Image 1 (cartoon, rainbow, N blue to C red):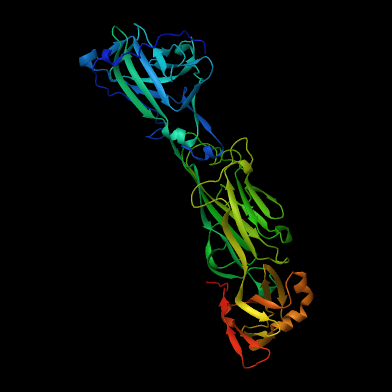
Image 2: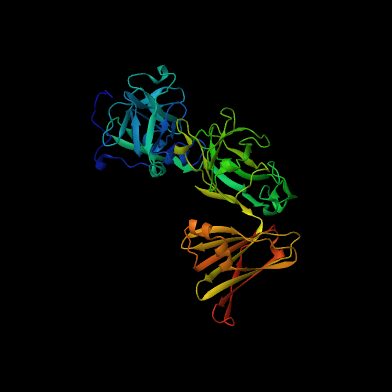
Length: 496
């Protein structure tokens, strides 16, 4: 800026300073008591800058001018204004101190020296004890009253740590005669806080009905959400699963515009194999379909399409329930699937890959549930088939229908799934590991496993865990009396 340079008469030797009591106040509260509230999410997008002085955001100074020492008023006032933080002014803009009548009391008359902005008054202006004054920016050489819009801004820029430390400091000096410090005041400018928080209310957590060909979920699941409006009940819709979050927006002074926010769900199974229908009541409780939904092989992105007039627009407080209802076809097999999600709060000018993850108990890449087989699952370590040892598997079926157990062989990081012969109701099936391997040699070698050695074995049987029993035994091929029971561990999925 081009401003006439003056000698900073405020920088005088301390010996010339008269003794005074300083009790004035400086404030920039907006909605808070410790400065304006700035959304923490803004800093995830990089360094941020916010206004500290304009027509709507003004520093307020309440003067304390001792009636005893200074008669309660000083003319020719000088204001030295400094900031803890990186403050910038647009070219040819200056700070001004203005009274309640919009009269300029002091105006910045030179470029800052060592970070000190000097606002000088004259013999016709005074700062009076107990009166409040505002500080904002105007164009240099323009009377405040003539600069009606006062759209000029002083801005503070930096990282979140800069904003937390930012302060404004004011000194009031009398320049009539010997320069004398009359009053001081300071104010914390900003406080940072999360604007958005997301809390999980219900995960995707359903059991695939293996007995029904894996086309549906099981119907009984205590305490689960049975519909997208949040009703709880013991009877589930066998074609749907429900995920629900609560999105809470805190009031801030500087924050994100959250319209067109995105819930990005990632599955570890190919979703195109049985692509579910997804509906959402994003931001509007009980109004399905208020979102745009896009798919790829492993991703489902649900985007708020209420771009105007919803609670995520602006900086006011807001709370909403966000529900996604998955629906399988009933004709395509449902695969065991784990789901992960990122909730992105959009900011104007960014796509969801460059926006921010909210706070709360929701974290980046959060696990948001799974679809698992409703089955008895037994795990056996150390099953052996070689020249010396064979392994026997005994499986008892006490369910109401015949079952075909699925055996997963695991060795050296490789796996293969093999289906065993049917076991009738109320009967026991006896299986030799060697016979299973011989009958499935091609599939085993294609999966990269050896046809001899030691294996971890996982047996999955569709139905209630209480209806099945598994016993495993290792036996010597040369000494049939030499046997060893193998431990069987259960990781069964249950309804309650």
